[in-house]
Every structure is written in C-alpha cells, then in structure tokens.
Length: 164
Image (cartoon, rainbow, N blue to C red):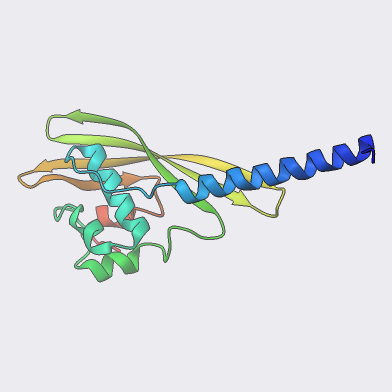
C-alpha cells in the first residue's frame, strides 16, 4: 500500500495539531500560581496588594492602604464595595510591576496593566495602560497613598476628603 502525497500532508497536519495540543496542555498544567512576595519594599507591597485583589483577599489588600488617605475606606467591606465587582470580565487583565523609585519616605511604583480583548475566536487585541502607585514609609512599612490610571485596583475618591 502506497501513501499518496495528499494523505501524507493530511497526516502531517493532524500530527502537528496533536503536538500543539500536547504542548498547550503541558503549558497550562505546569503554570505556577503567583505567590505573595516576602519583601517589604514598595514594589513588593504593590505586587502583594494587586495579588490580594485578584485572589479576592480584600482583608489583606485593605492592610496595604494608608489610614492617612483622606477618603480611607472605613472597613474591608467598604473597600470591597467601592472597587469594581471583579478584576476580570470578558477580557483578560494582567498586571506587571515595571519600575520602582524611592525618594526618602515616599515611593512611586509603575505598574503595567495589560488587557486582552477577545471579540471572537479570531479577533484579539490588547491595550497596555500605565498605572502609578504612590506609597509612604511608615513605622510598619510601606503603605499605599495614591494611584493613577488603575480603575480596577484603585479608587481616586480615596484621595479626596469627601471619599467615595
């Protein structure tokens, strides 16, 4: 029995698809979940704050906010109510700490928010948004005092005297 060239091509395509499926499964199942950082520098605090929000650990996220915020949420439930219902929607959102600058007892941490939009199986686009998180050093460590551009992770009304 002789295999025709069109049959070989078909078997090559099927074999390639099976190989890609195996590679995709390995990548998905070996991916490690992010862990909280143990350090207490500004970049670690911002990373841990965002990770706590992603995991729905609002108690931990609340602990990173400075009580000196003019519109400081009164409790964890108020923080939860004031942030959007979910960090994720029909789009995939990810965050990456890009840079950290410390100036005495103040710090700015630059975070890149990447949003992947999927309108169907073929149409995918993404946007990258810079977020600046501001921190102050206290006796207990670094705490968040401001943020700009991060509508999913920060409420600007926390910085206003009237609050939200």
